[in-house]
Amino acid sequence: MQRSEKPFSGGQLRIARLANCFSLDEMGEKVGVTRQYMHQLESGAKLPNQEMEEALADATGVLSRFFRLTDLAPLVPEQCHFRKQATTPQMVKSQALARGTVLGMVVDRLDTMLSLPPVSFPNIPIQSAEDIERAAEQCRIDWGLGLTGPITNIIRVAENCGAIVSHFEGVSERVDALSMDRKRPLICRSEAKPAACRLRFDIAHEIGHLVMHQGVQTGDRETESQAHRFAGALLIPRSVFVREFPRSRYLNWQNLEVMKLRWKVSLSAIIHRAYDLQLIGADQYKRAYIHLRKTGQSKKECHDDYIQREEPELLENALNVLENHQSGSVARLAVSTGLKNEMFKLATGFPVPISKAHSVANNVVNLF
Image (cartoon, one colour):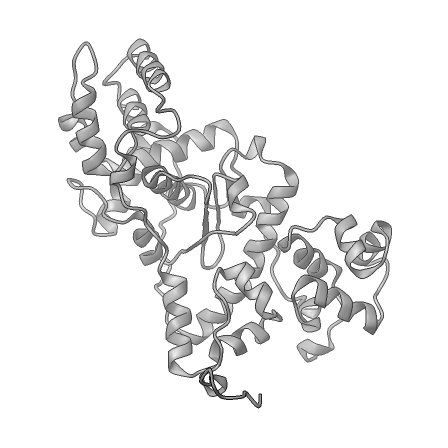
């Protein structure tokens, strides 16, 4: 059976709706039907006629063939790791998963067209804090990062290990970070955090989930604490941290700021790491956070602006290579995954390039 002959999938309609962040009511208004009718379409209780199918496609920025791509493997909770899952609204989770599913479709197609970095996240189950420290050390060694110096670019580390790092416009602002453990992992970073060092920590946190929690449903306090400790251990290995952390009765904030700039890790994370490694006690830990709050550094710390923000490169480079190889390739990629230009940009963050064959000078009338 050809893909185009497959029946209309209500599940694909739901993915398209949620990827646009439309509620059932909003979607119904766009195509002139009730919320109840939309629910019946998504549940499979009703099938749309051709005119309605085209209206649904236009409203969601997909081609009609998108609704017939029923061979997709749905994401399950064990594959998705949300920061602060308990406080993230279910609708936001659903929207993020839908956007991730659409991006995953594009990435899966890219994988058949280009040679992307092989996925090399090891599967390291953990039981104790010592296991977490060793897991982070093993990753640094396996990935050629060593155990004595800072990681220059943590996003590049994730991408070299085969992950696609992106952000979902309109969704990322409402989640701290999330990762999706699939054939080629996806990491979604938040655009709401201005501090580069906090974004670095979030990426390291998601790497921790991909390493330690394969097949494990996360979001509870224990798994979040484990990923938090992994992030600290990956960014500042314990052996060098113990040597560099300024230990005294009163914290030396000037020396801590030097550590922050060297390792590109927030003061808050350094304090937390020192507590994890029992270099400071509970009272000193508490006083340190009171100091940060009283000095207005709970959200924006001193020297944040001196740490350069890192940007993803892999997906953009892959699309550029594809388009440079043959003009119009990205447009064909979008069509093959059932996406119109607007949905392609929504999922990937990049517009479909205008084919060079159709590019004309400003003073020439375009016959196309």
